[in-house]
Length: 230
Image 1 (cartoon, helix red, strand yellow):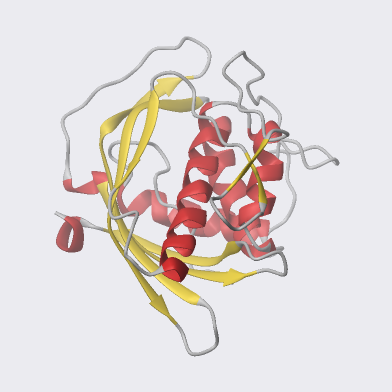
Image 2: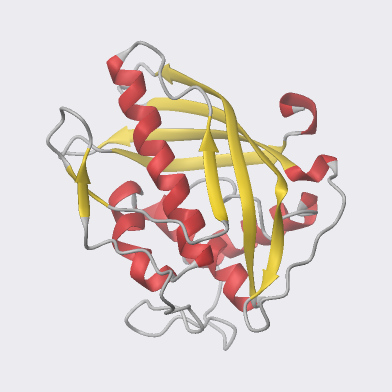
């Protein structure tokens, strides 16, 4: 089981508190907690309150990564939301493929938060192994429970790939959320605040290749990126 899920609980000012909440949600998602009335997922696994607007991504559509022949769910971010990825090409085809699938998964998570998590579930399932999927859904659910989304640009950088002895891969990277801002799901109001050290997060993620050849997230450890990412 992974230690924490993605830490951006409330875009801008997430901090250690959000890590603790995310960890607690992960325990619940993995069966460590009870199912209370606060769990808004119905028996089909859908999350109540998910958006169903025109900006919703369409995971039924698919793209093929160049040369690999694998049909992948299309991930679309809504207007006003953007992900940028630095260091996409390493010159090593295997590492580039790992970074490409990791990139699609990160955008799938951001798209699920800002459009409709239920519509994005096929993409999340495509890029995550079961434990990582449970953690990602638990993390995404916090936004819906709090009535929040976000707008702005998230920057991913300092991305490094290490091939492990067991055939898996470790990907470390930084996230800069200084240009993203919380958005109220009902009113659409965007709250802006000065950037802080809490807007930077460092990730260490394990990816494993599935039978189709897709590099799926297996576990993620995240923490303050103030020292490693600024």
